[in-house]
Image 1 (spheres, rainbow, N blue to C red):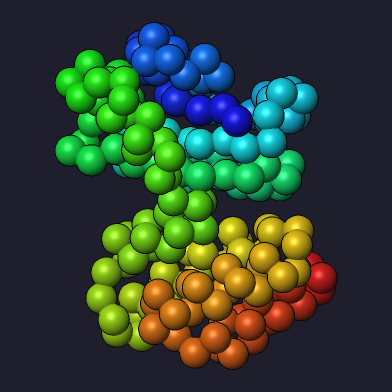
Image 2 (image 1 turned 60 degrees about the vertical axis):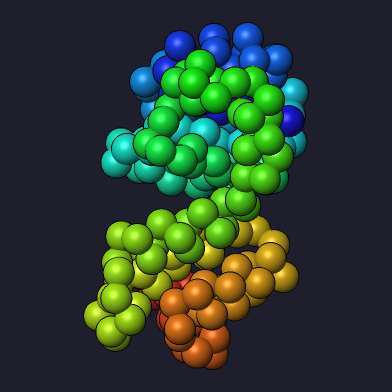
Length: 178
């Protein structure tokens, strides 16, 4: 597997922490070409971008590219608002290796992100959170995995899973029409 980080210092610190398969996007967007290139060397990627808004948005885009290419993707957000460089310097290589091991799946990370971006249990918040997740669910090539993600999202958001499936079908129909 590989670890994908944002900055060059993040890449250097993670490498020095004993994780040789680290790639730094160096503040630029991760591209489709880079994703295909990475596919030659790894099938599993842990995305560990900075925990700020830009890092979250970049992680989201990277997840989309990586999952479309069939990678097994996990996403790590370090606690305390730390980026990988500071985390390794302050807490050490072993602590970093430990948190990498328990990084959540990209589906769990996105569901949590949806809940943070659209807090509340009212219909408006649930609708916004579901609309945020639907493109990611639709993008999954495997039907069984897509169904499992839809079920997990429905449960986490407190929405009937039948409604989520209906929304997926409606969205697919609208896409075909356009």
